[in-house]
Length: 213
Image (tube, rainbow, N blue to C red; front, top):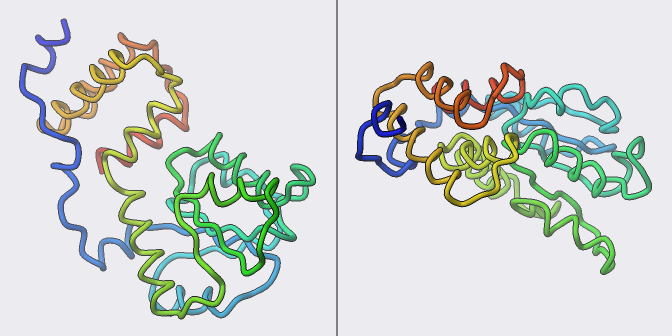
């Protein structure tokens, strides 16, 4: 059935990324900046024309649960206290669980002890607060590009669908490659429905929509 639906040859997912211009990155990217203070970097991101929302507490989790952001820049101290004593660590754990497509950038100037160092390990990148504005923006743009990449989005989809077996993952990767080549989102969704019993869950639909944008 799989071969009949999608043929035999599959291209690597990165083949379908294309070269995003900076204008396209500005148009497509959405950033959350979670910090109880108001660093100058936020204004710099805005003046660079990117969409960024400043969240001072990380207490209202609805936007993260809905997977609205491509990148979340997260401070350690003073945020995420609704989730527990781990502050920023607890917050990025939550974001990674509910929105695996969101790239996490750790943002802090303080050294963390051994028990807190997981904050950095669970982040996709680290942005020191004393990094210059220009270099900071380059790092953020790099993470935005990765967030919009087909391979990253596929891994987010796999995580959301809880697909762990290697064989299933590779079959799904091949199915997605074929569907992208044919620009046929409907056929891929049909495949997912048969392969893993995918329902029309909004969070899954959001990732698929990003993949086929």
